[in-house]
Amino acid sequence: MHEMSLCEGIRQVIEDHARANGVTCVRRVRLEIGRFAGVEKPALEFAFEVVMRGSVAEGAELVMLDLPGRALCYDCAREVEIADRLDPCPECGGGRLMPTGGDEMRIKDLEVV
View 1 (cartoon, rainbow, N blue to C red):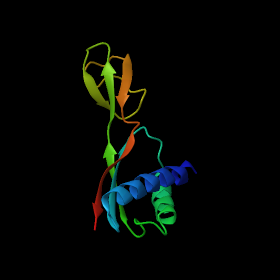
View 2: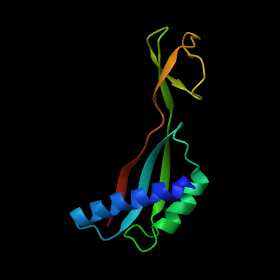
View 3: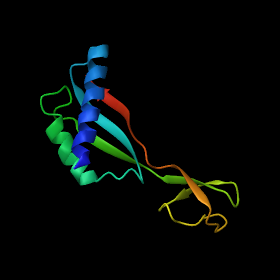
């Protein structure tokens, strides 16, 4: 389950931020997760709860924000939204697309006390 290691990285970022800014409690963590990031959301929720125990984010609400898949179409030179990496261009139907987004995962913001 790689979601556990993802949450360990998130915990490290949160704890570093908390130390640097005098934060004693994190109430909410908002994550942006790309469509192609390969993250199992139920597993991430479970891992988040387990990994955050004993940290400043223990009991924090996890909010996951979906980011669309994006690609550059070489046929019509447009950046488009795609649901699957192998989808044709929704604008021109072309099949020569290079994914440009949707595989990212990052902390968008924290609600702290």
